[in-house]
Amino acid sequence: MENWKLTWTKLENLSETAIEGLPDNLPGVYRLSYKAEDGNYYVFYIGKAEKIKDRLLQHLSSTEENICIKNYLSTKECFFRYAKVTEAYIREAAEKQMYKQYEPICNTKEPEGGEDVKVNLT
Amino acid sequence: MTLTICIIAKDGIVLASDSRASSFLTSNDTVKKVFRLDDHYAVGIAGDGPLAMHFFDTIASKLNFRNGVSDFAEQLRSLGKEKFNDFFSHLEPKNRPSLTILLGGYTTVNKPEIYQLSSNDNFVPRKSPTGFDCIGIPIIANYLLNRLYEPEITTTHAAELATFCIKETGSQDNRVGGPTQVAIFSDIKQYAELSREEIEKIEKKCDQFRLLQKGNFYPEDSIGGTASSQDATRQQ
Image (cartoon, rainbow over all chains, first blue to last red; front, side, top):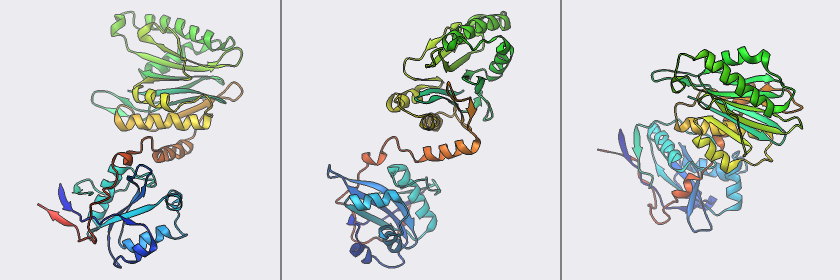
């Protein structure tokens, strides 16, 4: 079992302004969450991308196909955090691990990443 | 082992099962456990599958479907007791193979009913008071059905609910598994089994159901985190 340490960013408002401030070509994994009435932030989507900035902008764009994400974005105050991960297989494993922990409502299928890599999710 | 479920919907009856037969060492996923007896009567079984098939083959010609499901359950009790005493007269009752039957059908006034009969109990019919019943490994399915079933459910959604219960049980107990089998019928609609494609579509839909919002127990840490992220590093 490989252990990898990820550096997670603070929760940031999921807005074009915040995303535009991210570096270009930044590979990694990310989580989308919403602020609930109880004051907690609950994850509704997890993902991985070779370019996190582009992927997050895509979620905000009108071409987003995931209706569930669209619903959250249009009805809730949403946030994101990410961790930089250059190695593709670590991204895949981290995505799988996040899926297993959060079972996010907007992820429609289980990612195919390996389970022989352990990463920190906070 | 097995999980077979029968659900009464507002427009018919749904019978569904897994297809796994497992022993101490082996398992296979091709066992048929839902059978048509008539256009408006069907059974699901748990226990000794080959014995069930032979049992129904040998009693088929003696069955009378005209007097409603309650009378039919009595016929099954009588024939079951007779056949088991015949087949296994050399065995003490407690050493005989086990066969449990879920019977779905209609009364003479077209009311849907479910009966459970078990060889361990001389096939005494027990009528379901809830609108659903499960045999085999029923604990998870009973919990889910208690939570999710309403008599207003349609056969289309009852097929999804039954499949969901079977898949959830299979995810926790490897004695339940393999392709799901689903049959639907009513007092006016003839018995029909869903095709593999139709069931795959339902199974895919079930994968997207989230019974529990697991993420609700793992909210984000709203304070922690860094301003920017360094690349992941391998730990020793």
